[in-house]
Image (cartoon, rainbow, N blue to C red; front, top):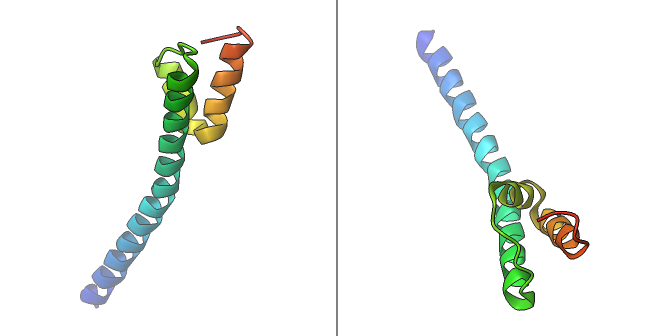
Length: 80
């Protein structure tokens, strides 16, 4: 009876781990794309956006949309 409980617990842990990795994969792809967009726009246009922890955090959490927000705020002279 204990073996069945352990097998069920192991299956639950494996399924939970799979779901966590699956959700992190999308987040990491989005974060990487945001940082790449910011880097390329900074390289091509020469905006001079500094790569501070705030900028990286916005791009990582917001992805491409976060990079666009940082770029727009820099162009408008509001921040970064």
